Length: 235
Ligand SMILES: *Cc1c(COP(=O)(O)O)cnc(C)c1O
Image (cartoon, rainbow, N blue to C red; front, side, top):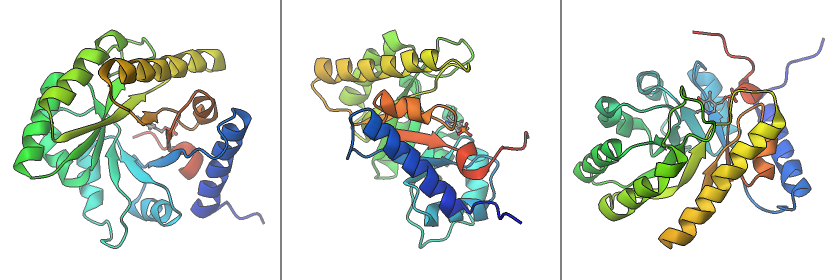
């Protein structure tokens, strides 16, 4: 009988695939952070992933994250990132568990997070979620509006540490379309970096089906669920 691979094996396997993609694209030696996306997963699966050395836990619903976070062991320092759409009325709760919001997509949410961070005397890492797929249904600021939002955060939200950008590739099997979307996000990041005179080190792009393509296009952070934990049951 063949045992199914442990979470440690799967983390190592994903890391290895990331390293191979880095080598193939002339980025050997560069680092890519691995975020384990844990929606629908049990707390034990999440702790297993954290102990296996993923860089962050990614959740996409505040309510689910709050429930699970209560069981999170204090001796596991892995940070939690919000990767799903965040409503302003959930922002206060979100700050109880997340140290990074990857889905900042508007000024009003930025202002709310700034106010809460000031009140709690903390700084909060944020990424701007950019709609790189062109699909109406996707969240995120449109590429043409990203500069204005980035300027807003830099000038008016000193408690928010703008580290970079997050994007989700279009829902397609075509690798070429993934590549176009990812390279668009990288180019946007480069161009904002030079026009705003500020380094944005994080490009969060790539999920289970497309993270190797994303790494080839410059990703510095991949968000992986299925490849670590298996297929999700629909909720
Ligand atoms: C679910 C999710 C992922 C991970 O998806 P997989 O295909 O399971 O790897 C990544 N990013 C976001 C924003 C998600 O909601």
